[in-house]
Length: 399
Ligand code: ADP
Image (cartoon, rainbow, N blue to C red; front, side, top):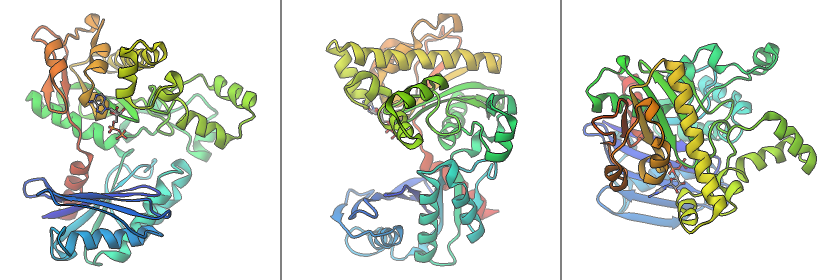
């Protein structure tokens, strides 16, 4: 069974064609610069690569090109789209409407579009892509939507409510939603399997650290709290996002700079985080290099991230009344021994102890880093959101 997984943004359309018989990727690529000019990069499992400029006025042309790349010419991997059993789409915001994957209908697309106010950058683009996909793929091919927020819908109200007037929750749906849910769900299940334990018996702190980062408390396989909030801006310091700050600092800075709400949002989302604190870069590798060379602000940014993660581990251990395992995933979590080392330092009270050598030498693979003495197991668990979307898609259409 073949599943096409689509992750659409406002100007890009990333895709993977996955063979679910052995969960291998047959081809993947990205239709980029939609609405600007257009570029397609496409790669097959046997190493054929296409990089070409295209014309993508809308998501529809991008989908048409994607279909052409998959089905015709020297970069093709299938003969026709009829060979694809289903399409699975990643959707960022499902709010309280969607707590699980569902089959796409015109009404569902409208509902996703209707949530755009809660995810301005993403949901409208998802709706455009869903409509384009519906036009381009065979009408008999089912489509499934999988929501980033769905895994977090198990949070209790005490975790997701803000201390704002209740009426604004009722009227404007202002609350914590959490993001990266597909990743946290995938890695926590993969960790339980690697530990040989039933996930229902585990208390896990899952650290997804990338350009965007979030920490989630997973108790018995369910999310009970997470660091991202109403939007993916809350929580720990990120590449260009500030993470949690005193809300009064936001109104103060906005008035000092004379920022509109949109300008203030740009400032917090694009000019802050690693980039804003260090003045060097939003990229963790550059931060590590600069810190190594003695750049004090890069060192500060790096220390801030590790310290904030440590505090989340502490608070989520309290929230779960214990911790069995700590996991690292995402570009930073999987690859940066420096960040993992700093996070796991001075955590002996929690019983966290990692093997430094193993931590230094391991990148991007499933690996237990904790020592035999460690009370808490510490693991690297590579994430694979596309695979989980494909699995969810198959599970739903098989019903
Ligand atoms: P996104 O959130 O956009 O999916 P990723 O999960 O790909 O991002 O993570 C990107 C981050 O991972 C960048 O900050 C990058 O510096 C960091 N990263 C990737 N490889 C390494 C590495 N070898 N060492 C340290 N950091 C790394």
